[in-house]
Image (cartoon, rainbow, N blue to C red):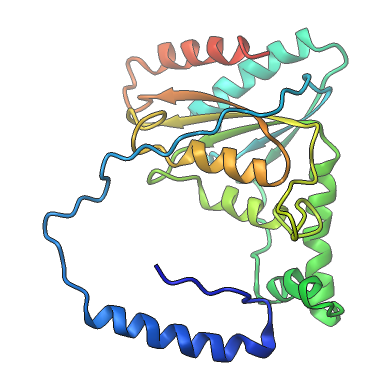
Amino acid sequence: EVALNNAANYETLSTSLEEKYREVTTIAKSFVRNPNAKLFPGIKIPIQPSSEKVSNGKKVLHVISSPLGDWSASRAVANQFLEEYQKRVEGATVKTLDLTADQLAPFNALRVQAKFAPYTNQEIKGLAKSEWEYTLELIKDFKEYDTYVFSVPVWNWGIPNHLKLYIDHLVQPFQTFDAQTYSGLLSGKKAFVISAAAGPTLGGERDITSPYMSAVLGLMGIKDVSHVYVNGTADQEKKGEIIGAASQEAIALI
């Protein structure tokens, strides 16, 4: 493992990169391939139990990351959950953010410069400022809600690229987490993550989606995170039954 620390310090970055390049070059020369190595060694990434319990909120944001529309299992479960949620939580309103409908702007070099500017007390100027304002607007909108529902299809054991891009916009120092203490700034909120996988991935050894979502939401201060697994959606004959069972599991969390 090679770690590059203090990457936000542009004055020392060049020297640090040269040092790390020499380090990885030395490691590469001594590398020996192990033909018996396993991609998944049977280590399950644990989800830390929620350290905070929050009441169900009335302002709900439903973040959709599946492009399958009515064919989406995660969206189907989320829709049934939200229908019941609005019945049980008086005055609850739901806004839907479909990340597949409109492409978010990429997190480009200008945004990266703006992201790290506060670390070195630099002023954000020019094009970087306008790019940064786009990200800040996404964060501002996200903060308006007190409850979040994420409907997430599992792609190659992880989350879809457009959801990752959205998260990369949201998770910003001094905006959603304290860069000195790494404590979240969005406490008092809760989230429900409804994930769907073609096979028996979720909740097992290959599940990196659920721990990641808990960790990244926790970094922002959202520690009351509940997970619903919709496994086996590739079986079209049982898909309806699977969705129905997962929906009841989700509703039981309200």
